[in-house]
Length: 430
Ligand code: HAM
Image (cartoon, rainbow, N blue to C red):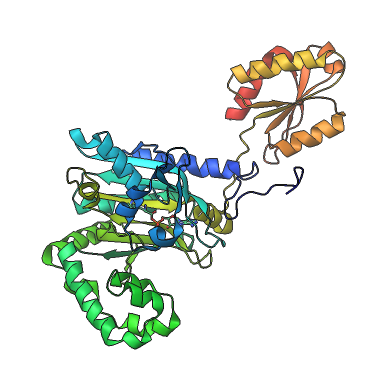
């Protein structure tokens, strides 16, 4: 490639451009607020982790670990590193490393980029973002249920109501012994139909037969549909846990479907698993997925601690909002300051700083520009008001204030320059 040739970003990894960032910030602020309302505190872990963390955490025979991880050897010291494909394993690592559970359970949340080498399409990217929740150290069904209520509240807060809200699918994966008994029954079933299994299924038959249930191969639809259900292998305790979660959902009017085929793509889950799905986004309709993972902390070398969590795909959530309920997101700018004529610039700079000191967001026009072209920029900026500071007004110690947004249909007013911060502050808070 020539030195001056245009460079493009990595396929499947997107730039978030300024015209989209107000919507992302709007969503982020609301999600963070709801998480905090339920007592969750933020945790930030590195984007790079040792590869072994994800292999052990997510499971060797999963799509993520088998084919989707960005793994490389650090050329400087030979370490095997992986760009995080998800954050549950990393949060657990961090909690163990810093002994976070020493004084009791912890409710943690995060937001950030994840990386999976999947085939890019709408709603599926190689770098994507997740809002995530991990509650560590809490065994009861009450926390599973509370997380589901929190997610339902989140859809509401974001304006996703009725048929625009993702719908909840829920299942129980039981405990290990129950899954082992089911696993044996599955192996027996698939062995009895070995002729219709594709190469992937053949390979997974003895390593991870549960994953065969995820198969999208139409030739295997019947054999998958007739496979034994895990729910028939659940013991009394697992059933009671699941029933308790469902009872809370019923009591709070959260609609859900029990999907006995819901297995999730990561190996750490037990008991409650769930997904929130929309049919408004095409093939990639799972907006949120999660569940309980009671053995992961111990498996990663910590003292045994039950846990439950979920992650929401930010891109999918934002796309859903744009599709069905685009919010009216303010630009965040209160004032655009237009100025012209000898000496106006110095006054304009002072006015802008005084307005900022009063707490307003002010963009001052920089450089040359006719009044007309500056007013065009003011309109495009999304600001609620323009200050017009020209020679004539300035000679009287005044500037004009012009409302820019349709809903503020008031007319232009002349305001003493010294009063501008208070005048605009009142207008903008009104
Ligand atoms: P996950 O189901 O693999 O779970 O991902 C959660 C969400 O991330 C998905 O429902 C989807 O919205 C989004 N997502 C996943 N892959 C992509 C992609 N390639 N492009 C765009 N969005 C994507 C987890 O990651 C678990 N760590 C969730 C969890 C937390 N379980 C317990 N605690």
